[in-house]
View 1 (cartoon, protein in one colour):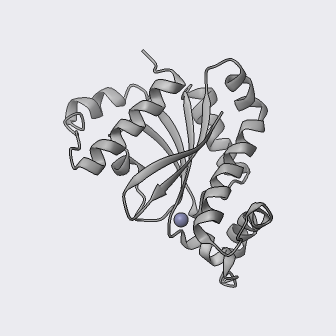
View 2 (cartoon, helix red, strand yellow):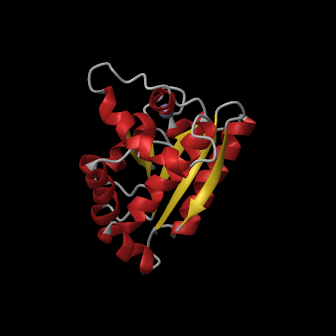
View 3 (spheres, rainbow, N blue to C red):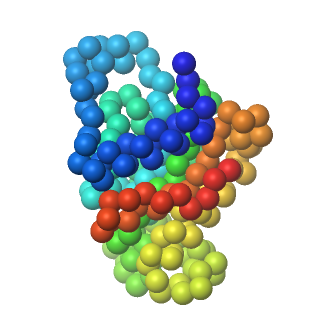
Length: 192
Ligand SMILES: [Zn+2]
């Protein structure tokens, strides 16, 4: 039985509480589950997260294989390939929850603020974060920029027709969230 969008969000936040308490439950990550998953997948949530090695969603939400459909890219920014991946999770796998997860100490956000983007293709990332500056009280504050960036990315995703139709029908929730690295907590910034 598929969880509702609300139930999926509760499951993630409960997992984060277990992570914080050091009470992770991983007994399901066994051979039997892995075999069952060869028949198909019904992930609880699709998470667009940063590629940062310190923000692994499976761990911070205490989930196991098959639970999270992950799209990870530095700065959790959007392009057509990222949107296509999220639409696959929603339309093909019928995932009830999409979470855009920004985080504290984000290197991509910092690179955009400090214009340290002259290497290789880095500019392709930072130019997707820069428009957020105009929405910030302090565009030099990496925490504010990371939070507004997550909210703006979620807002843009909600406008994609494929997602908007499911939100309208109550089959999908798109939330923006923020991971506080110092405490290990995940805070919900906005919900559809
Ligand atoms: Zn980051």
